[in-house]
Amino acid sequence: MSAFGRVAATRLNLLRVARRLERVAKGVAVLRRKREALVSELFKLARPAADARASIARRARTAYLALLEALAVHGRDGLRALGWPARELTVDITGRSVWGVAVGAIERRPSLRRTLGARGTAPGATGPAAASAAAEFEALTELLLQAAPQEMLIRRLGEALAQTSRQVNTLERRLAPGLEEQLTTVRRALDEREREEHLRLKHLRRRRR
Image (cartoon, rainbow, N blue to C red; front, side):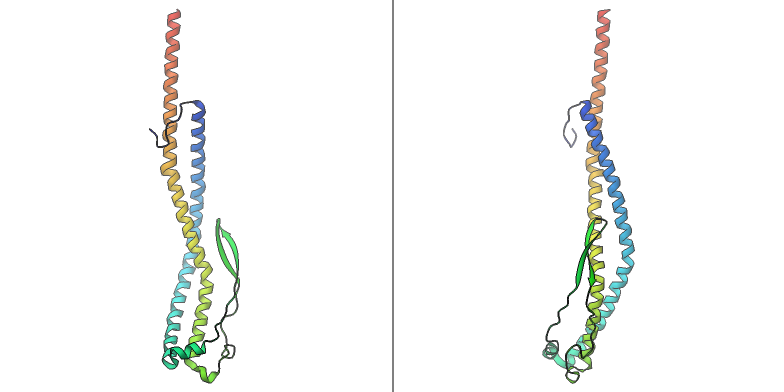
């Protein structure tokens, strides 16, 4: 018995199953093209994303070394006092679609790097260690904001690729074979019925003669 259950062996059901099988084949073709497009898009993003991650890693190492030096000079409480008040950052984010995948893009963001005067701290109280740590982390934050939309796009494209691959496998390995089995079963039953009808008519002609 087919995994899809039995269907009555009629010409109408034969046409229905054949049409469903044809739609499945078209769906597989569309999903395959989508999967190829997603893979191509991911390959284009792979190198820039790897370069951005390497830049972030280098900047993070420099920034945290500067932070350790500032902690050694000012201590945790001293740096907390120098960092007050907290700075608020506002960015404008718009939505867009890439191959049907919804992602966000940063349209506008403020400049993150500031001068010592713009930070609102006294030069004498701040010192070069704290100023260097602040500048390094501002540069690191800029890199993170630049890379964030791209990282989100890669993650969403990867999820879409995985989902598309699952859909292709479901159609190819489960739905299509089941429909083909149904089609074969119905066609075989119709052929057998036609042969029986032909033999019956032949037998009736013989009896009339």
